[in-house]
Length: 160
Ligand SMILES: [Zn+2]
Ligand SMILES: [Zn+2]
Image (cartoon, rainbow, N blue to C red):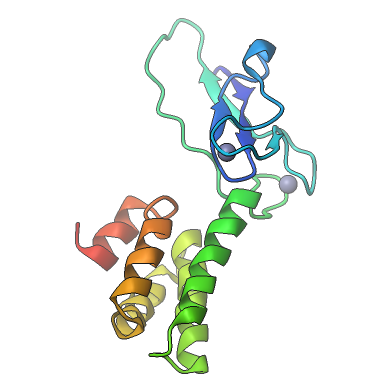
């Protein structure tokens, strides 16, 4: 029921408006939080990014969650890519893990963000290596992931 508006989001993931279609006056060419360019469609397949869900006769507070991946082509949106890359770069910085361990930890992060059947394995790997990576890296990775992983994953890896 109802129709979806179009969201406008900056490349770093700041949501400019969930109603860029219905309210063009809310649109911004650049993000006022970080100065990045904004998009309203997937840069790979040009499908509009879903925004506010308009349901006839229903007025309510709508908690908007920006998508991580394009619903049409499955490609990660730029903000998802950037967060994953930032987490991976942080892991590169540690001297406490060897290269294989770094790769395991990095791939676990990709799986944690995606969800799906690999999540449980990814949680185990993440917990195994993140402690070894050192508290500074662990904290940085956590700050990044907290914005991108599901509540279930948060509970599993941080117990909150
Ligand atoms: Zn921004
Ligand atoms: Zn797409």
